[in-house]
Length: 383
Length: 128
Picture 1 (tube, rainbow over the protein chains, first blue to last red):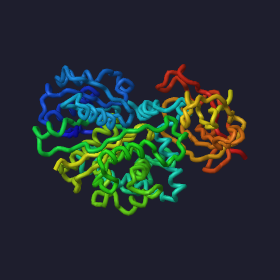
Picture 2 (picture 1 turned 30 degrees about the horizontal axis):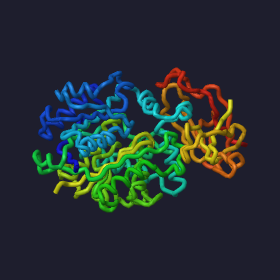
Picture 3 (picture 1 turned 30 degrees about the vertical axis):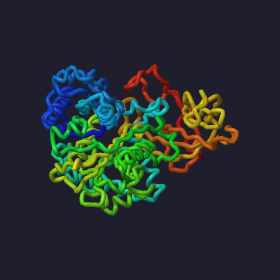
Picture 4 (picture 1 turned 135 degrees about the vertical axis):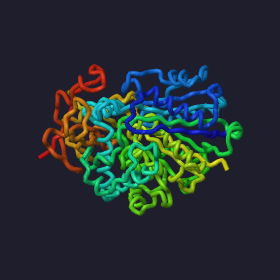
């Protein structure tokens, strides 16, 4: 059964007073309104979230949301796949419709993080590492630093090319009213910012963020009862790589990106050249290169050249992260993959406002851990 | 203490060990101790934003060890990750040797249950 997306919402991302229950209720309510779906029409509810228990001590948030929006007796489930929880939620929501188990599925992703210090939030995220990594104080940013060094040394890529990813995504974020940072940052400022994980600096990393986003899914024939402007989930794939990051044969290849991308392309019956716009998981600038290469937008070791040439800018041949990416939007873990879905949905239904590019086919790649789990989603315009 | 990498009957070697070999799915039945070997730095970083209970700055390296003598024609090398010894600098390609440390970070300060894992291990020291 072909699966459609008929509505979407996104809260303000940033430092919010709201706690997790309030954040997901805000996005959920807005998505019901956007899709013009009544609470009692929802059959399945998925809530993407990595760590509400660890961050806030709040468990059972799928049940909390179902009650707060009056979705009972809908089936409800919390989806945790670390940073790719949002993408995994898209996968679950797609499955629920494609299998015929649900005729109307609400997906809400959310995370509340900013009440913790950076060190504490970093530790919650680092808890996904293997004990032999964790005991050495290995964090996700340190994986990014080691991978960036290896990439730059091996492919003779200039350090500036990573800064250009950050500058591009910040420039795109200026036009995203939901983004945590809506200001341009120039390459010089990025290269002068404090070192976080050598050779990467503060502006190579996304911030710590509160926020929520939501999408509404149903079969295509049901979608037509609600709207003419819907998106079709034409391809989706999910894959897992090693838990221990240094065990991968090539530190510059994320197997989960490659495999999930292949699955999504095959299901959609398209290739990388058919993609008009993409949202990539730029939790760290180096990840944009690794995903561009893993998804075959660029050859191995060459993505930096496309960034240098401006090919991935909003007016380029393949705009990447028109939303501003995680870099400027922020990265509320469980919300991020859903917010990527929000952007590609808006792009293919031609409702992205000042961020709009010409796009019939859009792709989102949501990376969990350091490529440990990855979901790639392709949406196409309904008409 | 040993710094064991684990080997299956087909000579595939991993650090750390796994229930089944990720390559061929056979049990890992043998080990090779990396503690007395010299490795080569594949890549490294110095992290300044470290979590609670972790030294700052924290230099970490991925190091590759030649284990071709222990795998009977299987894998030639295995990689491990670890802190670099205090006040030492490394560059990619440098030779390093493991040095035992009783406590790599404060087990009480982080999110993980202290009893759930070990906290001692090996740091990497540049070979002069």
